[in-house]
Image 1 (spheres, rainbow, N blue to C red):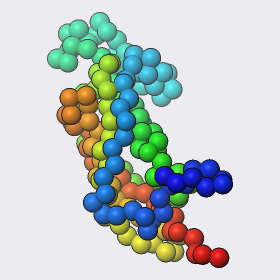
Image 2 (cartoon, rainbow, N blue to C red):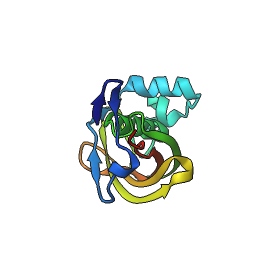
Image 3 (cartoon, helix red, strand yellow):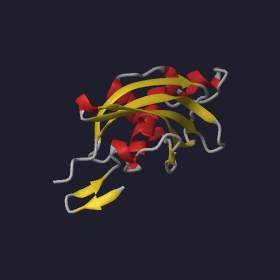
Image 4 (cartoon, rainbow, N blue to C red):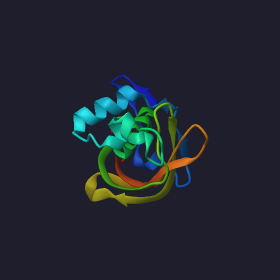
Length: 157
């Protein structure tokens, strides 16, 4: 991320390289996160919100919503700064949910640029990034890919 007189500025499409990898900092999932996400979305599935229900469940404890984990991953990626004022659109997402995330787990994201495609008519180019959300043990809890439309570098004036 660069800084200009107008504030932080991320990477333009031309700055991104295929194979480039970025890793976020960790974020610990708390009980409050799960309670607030349930209230925000209305998803009160007992797997997320009911301690007694989960005592007899094979996982034995409450599980964070898969979409909560994914939402945190998107936020963690944004905090890296490479999209700051240069992302034009979030174009697509495909994710596989592999392992549960429990209260107290710490997640981080590893993003690798898999493909670039120039889209001049849209003002930039599409990058396809492979994403892995990992827990504190380095195990992949979610994986997939996302497409972003990044702005092209402005022509020099």
